[in-house]
Image 1 (cartoon, rainbow, N blue to C red):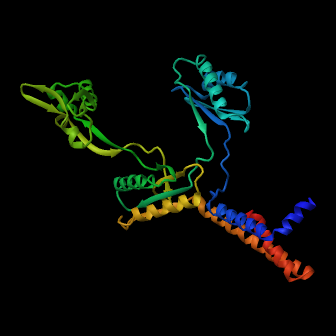
Image 2: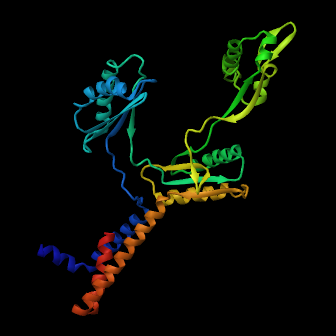
Length: 369
């Protein structure tokens, strides 16, 4: 130990060079390391879901939950099992020990679920297994609201969603609070009767004309081209022109026996901002990327994309984790500086100015190294 100290004291320039390199590497690491409010912890947690339409919560527990519990309870590494039974649905949450291999756990769960499926009613749907990742939570939410038609707001939200997903650090951007568009067909029963068309015939025509029909391939001297007969409905005008029946008197189209309106499906999710209906875009970053840089890039894309939008459309940023992380980092840096100053003051009074400078330099250096 003494020999090592003597060797260090004989080479002060080498030691200082190494110290500068270590401090520089520490500063670079601090600037580039991903900042997280909570670290990415890969906990093996799975959710098993089974549905059977019409079954009561009591029957769901007896017919769906119990077979699953009986098979899953004895899994190796299983820490906790939680079951939920509701009308038409049963769910089981499986939490394994953190040191247990996730791939092995998933394989075991799939095997046991397949066994339990054989003991369930044939009316039950196939069980689904979902892997839970606590790191895949939105880092920022962009909310759109304003005095514009619902269809306009939805189209703007779709455009903005596509723009956000072009950011390299963004994993996905999910819409919520919107309603999917649909074409509503209102049948005129009197017109159907006059043409002698049944409702089943009308339904068959709609289904058959909304299919993409492959027509083989064409070989040429320069390549091979796939052929198809387009039959997908894209606009309301396409629906009006759908042929229902063809005769010597002409072609009866859907527009002759029905009215078509553009409308929306019933809402599945609701989003409100300050009491106003809104559409939210929840942005999730890729694992291992920097939240602060990711959210800054998302904000820049949103500001660029919304520059030409109507003034009546309001854009709000909510649940921005980068703001909280910046506050935490600022508080940490402030605490470190306060600690350094206090220690330097104490050492200055006891050991003098030179010793206080050495201590003041040693504290941040130890952090960087």
